[in-house]
Image (tube, rainbow, N blue to C red; front, side, top):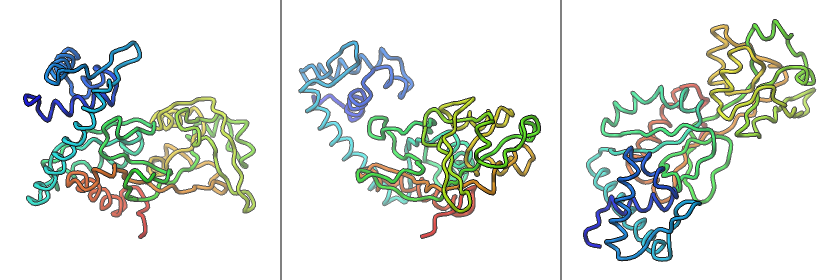
Length: 306
């Protein structure tokens, strides 16, 4: 067991967490065979079978669960130690794995990457873009950018700003199908909905000062917020999406607000979320502090008022 490295411990932890060799291979950008050989070598060094292999995937054996606890403890200690040295040297360095939705990544994070690099040239970002709510521990995420959902007790959250949503369509669509004058008119239109986050399909309005919700039934639907925006831009219907995306397109004449006098924007807080055990690492703090500053300077979001 003395021949095992910290990388071996981290690799085993990821195999146990992800449940497949192929997922770990993709994460490390190496062949699956290399991960398989490494796992066999780790089991041989421990003198025990650590992983149970079945058609349903890979799960730790009883010995594997014990080994996994020590892997997490030791790798966590090493990361903390690295963070202490980085903090003392005043430099943030290493990979930071960030999860965000398509819209947040494209319109809020990526435009600020060059500025982040200038501040911290030794910092490297692995951006995971998908609309589903990731399991941070299972997926190995350092920072998740989340909107609307209050953070749980197992994470540390820093509010970055506020994200609002409104209804939009192209001038061509409205010319062809008419402009709705009341929320009730939406049932006669082609609507674009989100199949991944169905809560986004409850469109809120204020009618004579009273809240009204229209359950949007999609003529077109996608699990990607980026794709729903593209569907709207191609004139296929009316969509509700982030103002940070839409308003610049309105200014260019590509989109037109719909039912603006009725829409309840319901601004949602946007958070940078980290696991409790990792939020003090300098590389993670450096990213979050950068985004706090980036959003506060008016980069598409209303800043959070403390």
